[in-house]
Length: 135
Length: 263
Ligand code: SF4
Ligand code: SF4
Image (tube, rainbow over all chains, first blue to last red; front, side, top):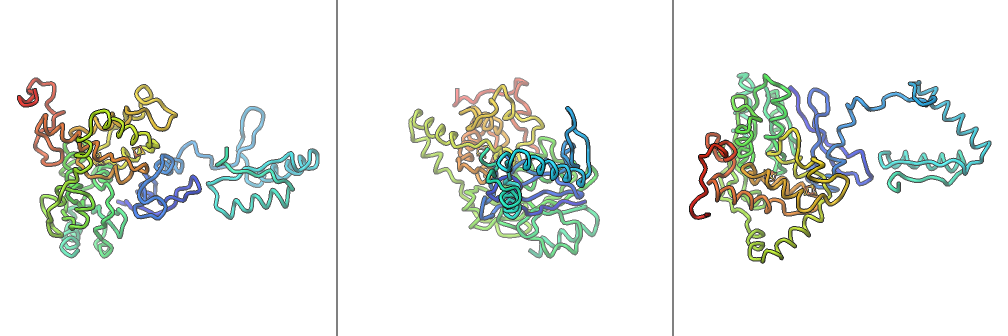
């Protein structure tokens, strides 16, 4: 038998609410708000309350998919990233850097978001960078 | 802590229980080995342990569990047993009395379970202040008060999720015909009144809902009103005994008569 609660941070927006992930037999079975946490002290929004659900979801994407025609096919990371890189290069050369935009996410860390803007400005050469919170 | 630890140790070692649901530090935890019991604590941060136990009994259909119970947990446990969400033969409750500080903070009338293994029983005092203030208002003012409270709701469902007495598989609060989807605040006052009605004969006044509400809505006061109505009409107070029939257990069979004084 196993049941424990693991303190963590809600993966959704940038607030950083404390959650307790409920674990049984190595699987997430629920989430509770973390009491006494400096950000949310035992309260959550609806996203926080359901933030465990995607982890074991059948519908979760676990492999890169490449769009072909109307559908998608599974691909390796190498192939997928290779395709992204070559298409970005191609578009930049043909249409110019400002024809490309990047969208970062509150689900990522500060560092990852920093990297994306660096990539967008320094590597591609565009200031077209925005954030999911402004969608 | 010693009497509690000793008792849990004994139960685990004799194989009478497979696990003890309590707190490790501040966090809910299932102790399955005697060696772990050093970490056993009675945190003043309350989580809905009986609700978690119901989940565990479902996950481990053969498992027998010890359960840490404060006064509020015991009341929840009793209602969950009556509603067939917990099998009483598969739970061994071990009682803890709350100290004065927590009892006062919770505004708890009965801050101890029937049998106390740890702590001293202190007298509690139920917090009725807001309800009394509301009752002094005229109807319109009172309605305005509640509507302005409900307007703050962000429909997080936290009140329902944390509530040890909310256990239905399908929830009326997610019923599109009753509460239209996609709007915040949710339909007023339907959302809150539906939940209040559903707490009739169930709410044990643990206060976890109000603690979990990010909008600071005085939910417990709303449900206190319902608790009082149920007590007036049926003489029933949820969570006091496993034997006593709850109103839903006999309504409709013709046995019930509206008390004379309320006619
Ligand atoms: S006080 Fe709130 S959380 Fe506790 S039983 Fe009543 S409705 Fe549920
Ligand atoms: S916890 Fe508060 S904000 Fe969340 S749904 Fe309940 S009443 Fe609304």
